[in-house]
Image (cartoon, rainbow, N blue to C red; front, side):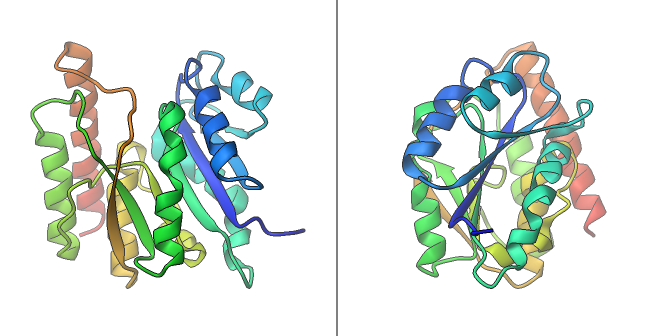
Length: 228
């Protein structure tokens, strides 16, 4: 079987209104790529829409969080990382919509040898809270690796093939990106950030938004403690 040059894993939970646009953009900028949707047991039509759009859908048997769902998808393609010429693996969120077209810049940075793991930093911040959760994740990465990142929890990433076995399984739930960064850095791989003009579904300063960020913070604390 031919190994694709790029494998994309899209994290999704109840993204039925955006997943098709995201996948269309990915197909256009990554022709010939293998595209998987890591569906975290969505209760809407995310999985059906993704399959209709031509993606390979890996659905969790129950809601197990972002890290768990992405681990299931990553394990399906993990053998590709062991081939003589492994692909570049791209991870992104299902709500990027048309802005997913900008992700090739991450792949290009990896292929140029600028870094082994490229992380997208959003050029414009939309929504969000007071920065406590992100600040904690940034501090956890600094304490564990010495790295200082501006976008520690960005889910838009690209990595060299040999990095994937090192970072899988991912840290549970929202700890996925923090754990990935720590595991890659400790294994000696370089991490770089690239500013991209991306947009996704932002959470505001509402009860739902603060609840979401409280869950994130819980997962960041767990991830740091598990890696001490």
